Length: 457
Image 1 (tube, rainbow, N blue to C red):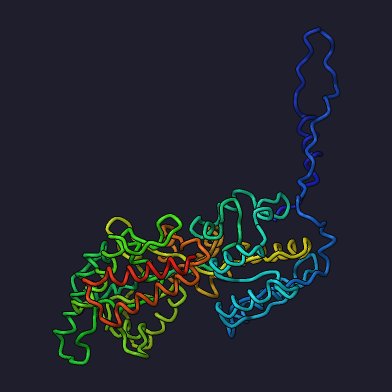
Image 2: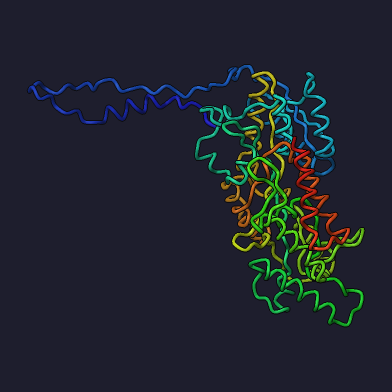
């Protein structure tokens, strides 16, 4: 945060007084008094009201968490309340889940009881923005007193920063960012003859199939049919495979699923299952325990699950090394970045400024680094990562994930993605659950495209 520097004018006078003055050409003696130095008025904010109007203001934030996650956030709220120089008082209310949060915010929007700040998914924010309830943060970000410099804005990697942009408007700020990764058992892979992780889909298939064959060839009967990739049908996993094959769900701003690249992606993963090189988990099976038990060479997990992976290996007494991977593509690997954002809803000018000051405090490099240590997610600012050197050293998989994220991809920047995303996961699951023949993949993609366009209207 920047404040007017009142000594600028005096400093300018001092500098000009020390600057030699050229003698006049007329032969007149040089004047001993330099001309007045130009003055530079202190930066002023375009935001109203003045800071005096912030004293003692109460503003409310709604978040989607309960239990430990809620307690951690509420501790930060209490810290802000006890330390901010304006006496702003934040109150926080947990809504138990993102879906319940969305419904409760939507019900509160037309009333005076709506919150000032919501921690929500970007696609949820776009729905509320379309209804005219979201404040544009561009004026706050660019304010010369309360906002950020261009250098501070560049401190946010673009894959985190751009998700909440809408043309020249900014409808939110990133608050949490994660991704789903392929996890590879490096020790087991090396024993199978693979010294490096798969660099493309064909190498992924080779490694997965060899892992399956190794379990068939051992002396245990109950692990036959396992090995390879333990199938994960989360929507972000489906989208990651599509993008690895240079596909996706959008063509411009229209949903488009039935494309050659998407057909290739879905056919590839479905054929892995047909060939026995990928397997669906039984009801109640813990994929991470299966990974730690060498029943899968590859599993899929979110960044925040990495500590659970470590605990699963410890519980299994397994000292194998594992590493996170992006989804291997022919020309470029794929990683979809997603997570929650800070959404300011329209209220009075004093309340909006108070809300912004809390948002800016949350995203300071120090608080960003503290959050990353606590929740295991990506730090949002490059300068925050510089504060996490010891954490990186003790969490090598997390550090590798941070490097992979720099080349990550955005989600669709559409309000309808809120429901299309769920449909994508459901369709991907159905393809595996009903054992759809790989030759019928275009059928399910056609159904998904038709449904997505209906949902997008």
